[in-house]
Length: 172
Length: 443
Image (cartoon, rainbow over all chains, first blue to last red; front, side):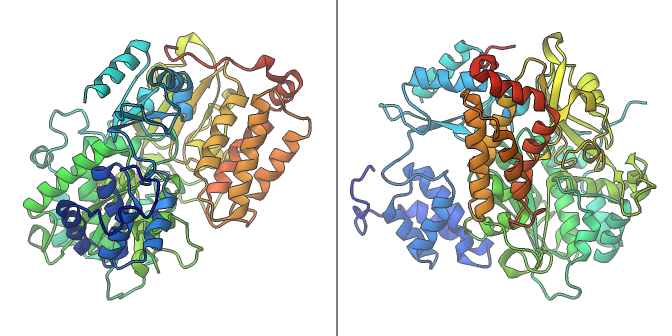
């Protein structure tokens, strides 16, 4: 999915029928089509691990919007990745909020960086794990905490737990 | 007498999330009865008379908010459930949704009925994947049982509830930011008025409430306003405008305590009681240095201020912004205040939505200055500059559209005022006195 030319793939690649159907299926929930923008971006990114320009144009087409409107919304949320910068298979977020920092969150993040050989926002060479820092993930009772995709993992407070988690994610 | 939890009363049951379990405990009986016996306006009146105030942070009286809807509006009217819960160190709504989704759903249905909403959007932050799936299952069960959808529980009232997932932006917790995000736009808060009750989602009247607030509605309608008012703190007799701090509150405790978690208590517990009686005390036998009393935005409290009651008035008496989310994060005596403030400033500069220049630039400047401190390059005039920025960004000075910047400035003002000698010494000594980053296996 990595493209040097942002226009590459336009008119060539297509969203799958399943993705299009999921997006279209949400339309009746809202009084205007634009409201499906965020859900559509989620659906596409779940499938493609990014939202390339050609997919953005297709979303715009389904929602009767200008691609610029979809891009405007998408670019607001640092959550979505462009075609040049796709996610790895699993996204691992390390919380850097105060509650986690007070219990070693900074050290936890640097351990993941070291052991995975990447900086936050980068993906391991094998494409398996994208490491991110997160602002508070709302799991403060289990600080320091991380998130595997959208699921919390609490009390990652020993180097062995870091190793075990990395091993688990590499095996996925 | 020990307080008996109501909102979390079912949280430890084995099948706390199932419809069957909820019904076995009398769940949805209140909804069925209210739909038969009370008009929408009577429900609003009951909630108004209970004195319930919003649990999301601002503490606005919930029933009063509902009365701002235009009378006789032809509809549609929307209810937005604010489960963005991005205020750092706050997780009470996550626990509530994960442990007892049907209670929240019954609160949604009752409140939607009161405000005559035909659709409720359950806006949940992306980070709550488990909560989202638990709630979706509860919604599916409720539809199948005729509790949601057309003519719920055989009444004339119909309601749809849809989940809408966020994408990791703090500003979506601001109610008009949430509405913009729901509409598929960047989550830039709107200039008010018009308030959402007049013109909200899709330009229609809209009420935005958080799950804890809505869960309280179930118990108010079940047990009555007098019961609700028997819990918490009555209005300050010296302040005729104080509506009081009634009812239960879900408090979060995190940071340097032995047992972090969520606890339900009557509004008005002190920070000290919370830490000692419910958080297992400060860890490692140490003393506390201070805390963040209600999420990052509320400012900083010193240990000497720990006897402050956490009701809607208490934190303000010691210079904090307010009760906020009731999430207390404790830091021990060995923690550098510079490290604490560095973390808070980093958060706000990252999460400023960028719409208003004073906030976008101001939060960035504050972080740059405090980051300079942390690198041992603080300058004598920096404290005055920090205070000046903190004073000039926000709704209160009138320079921004929403309150994010007020919340960003408050901990800066509080920390400098309450810990000035430590900042001055830090600047003088450079980085040599910085507390070492805690190792991960610190406990």
